[in-house]
Length: 117
Length: 115
Image 1 (spheres, rainbow over the protein chains, first blue to last red):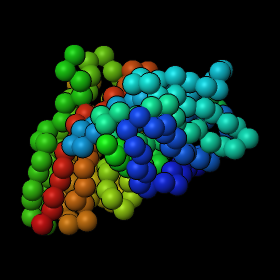
Image 2: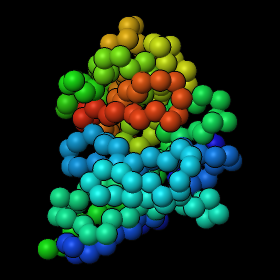
Image 3: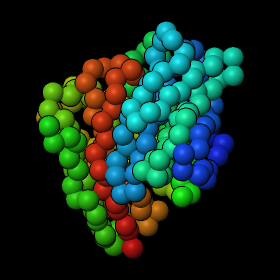
């Protein structure tokens, strides 16, 4: 079974500063990896996803993430955050090509991002 | 497209009552997922359907929980009888295609409070 760890429950960043949110996963084969964002009172929106190929993936809103197989990590980055980026961020793993068609995602507990003016 | 539609958005009920949550997936999507979000446990997959057929219900916590998908445009999650520990936000999501790589689109959620 897969699992996801987001070690930081809260992160505070000044507006304009760079951001990195950590995500570590556990899965026995090649996973599918996702980052979602949740604004207060809203559902989740996909930021980006990794399936194969280039390990650096670009997403919406200026976010990117890098898949590092050796570290079982998929950290999310943004070079300069905006106040509107304040939200809850979730890393998720899905069963990869060898997963036998299992579709459900396993989510981390989330990281709450606070933006200081 | 209106996106995934969930109703009601908020539900307050008393312990022991039956609760029914509803979901309308995005038209054309053939996979549907029910998740539960709590502070303690985060986001958990309860059950998912593919082409209206339940594929994996191993996340359903107890027999008090049941889910149906009578057609491609409607699903329900029922809790009977409800308990205070069922209080959570329940999300429905849908996707096109039957593999783990397809993006799941989430509804706004139903916030359930059981008194």
